[in-house]
Image (cartoon, rainbow, N blue to C red; front, side, top):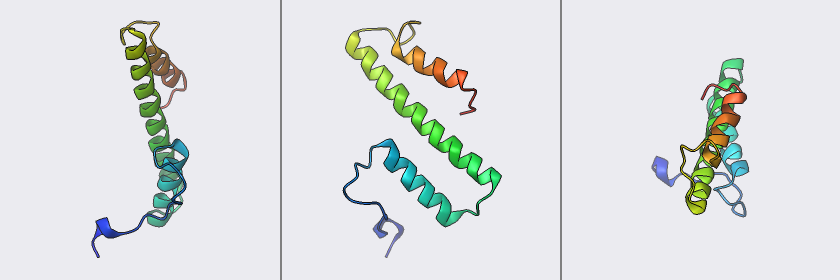
Length: 92
């Protein structure tokens, strides 16, 4: 049995592309491979925030393209997502 043959313990009914499914998989992976510590929890939190940022930015870019808005425009959805995460002061 190789690494790729290993089954992922995720309920089959869930859409694996949802944020909640991503978080569930990351937390299970974290708990199985790391000891719980402040540093480890910060790393897990950072991975989750980064994934949320990437998903929101991807959606905003798609929405800007659909609306015909330049992504560099201050009024673009992409700019709003960027400002949101900068205001949260999270190091990604």
